[in-house]
Image (cartoon, rainbow, N blue to C red; front, side, top):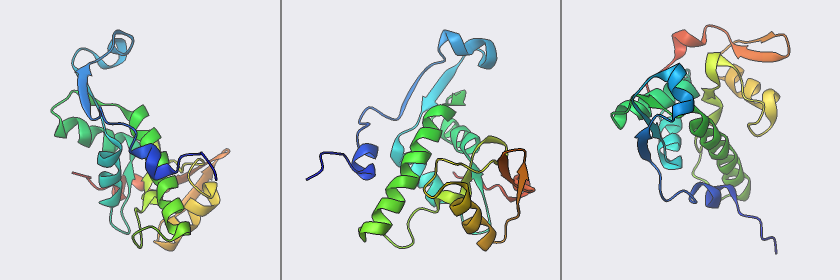
Length: 159
C-alpha cells in the first residue's frame, strides 16, 4: 500500500487558510503598504469551478477576486497558482479513479498570468491546448511558450 497522499488529501492539509496579513517587507517595494490575502485551496477550487465553457480566468484574476472578498490590498498569486496546480491534479486523479463528480473542475480554463498555458497541469501543454481548442479558443506559440489568443476578451470574474 502506498503511503503517498492523494491530491485531494493534500488540498485538505491547509487548515489555517484563508488568512489576511500585512504585506511582507520584501514585497512592499512592489506592492506598497497594505494587506495580502492568502486563499484556501477550497476558495481557489470554487473560483476555478465557476469559469463557464468558452470563458477563461487567470491566476492573477483569481487572486484579485480573493483579495476583494477578504477586503485585502492584494491576493497571493503564488499560493493561488500552487493551489490551482493541486486542484488540477486532484480533478484528474478523481476522474481516473472514478471518485470525481463529472465533469469535475474545469482547471484547463485557468491560465497563468498573461494568458499562458500551464505546462504543470496534468497532460502538460498538449492536454490543456486540446481542451481549450475544443471549447473554441485559439492557442498560439510565442517562442517556447503557449498562450490563448485574445484571452483578455474572454476573462470572467470569478466572484
